[in-house]
Image: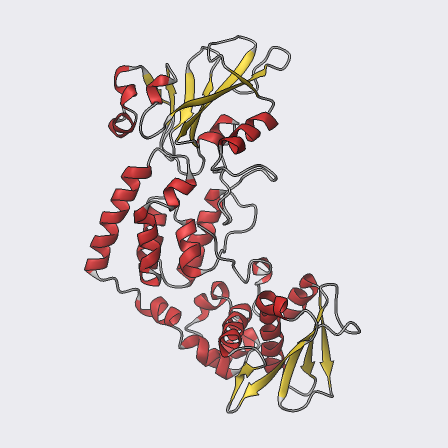
Length: 269
Length: 152
């Protein structure tokens, strides 16, 4: 079973603040940031391989000098997101991001809509990581704008997230799913309790069944991990496509990182 | 104290002496235990939280496990009996896939971490053999340093 790559793996340790220090992230990634007066008004920013401007990674981000701070921050975060997940598509050239008509916080480029959508989501996770945002969801919107140095629209998008709904109202788990989960976990525990083979654990039919259930199983999975620590990290990675555990962490440390991740997103009280 | 679940999975323990020596713990596995690491679960999982030595063949191969012990100074042998000047490990496989490793103590008994369960001491290698753990496929030994065992 292949793991899914966490787009934020390289920078997760830098997601501190608020506000998150975007220029420090860019520096660590070897990306130069340039502010330009010459970008057309409809271009918010670019990720470019221009050798005159590129940093050690071979990439540079160009933002419009005239834009206000919150807008520049979103542009930089969005281009960092492109760098993290799409730079392989850009061996020689650039991604120029135009603001969508009427929605200045969402950008379009020559990449597909789904790629732009992914970059927008990752940008929000860079600017307002849940580890920082979750404890502050009851703050006023103006405070959040100022703390994270983002636009009101970005704050509104974050606050409309299902994560915030979970954090405020708790998770709803159907009794049928809970009973089904209990049955398959018991079977998995019984069949794998004395194996040292992770492959045997994660390829067991019950384990793959849990992954197939998808995101709605996450509250149960986090509760199980919290109450009966076991090898659910591969399933969590497969379902969420994230890996909040630091590289080189022990299993115990990785488990704690995942539990914190789950709490920040309202999956676990 | 006996462990009915363990005896269910390793029926040979029902009529062979064994002793539970730790609480259940999912944070390390038998191969970690056999090299003296109680903080890592050794496997090449592809997600963070697991450890597998760099440039070592896959944890799903006997070659991988043999390489781990080779790198810890062990060499292959056919002899599982107690030799005072050697430390020994026994790798179990099922259908060619490594399932378990036990380490010999100075007394001649064996000690094992049973998956995510207990550490145990068991009198014989054969007492673990069966459908769950497989059979002993490889014995390896290393010479004690200055007459002293690295692990006990």
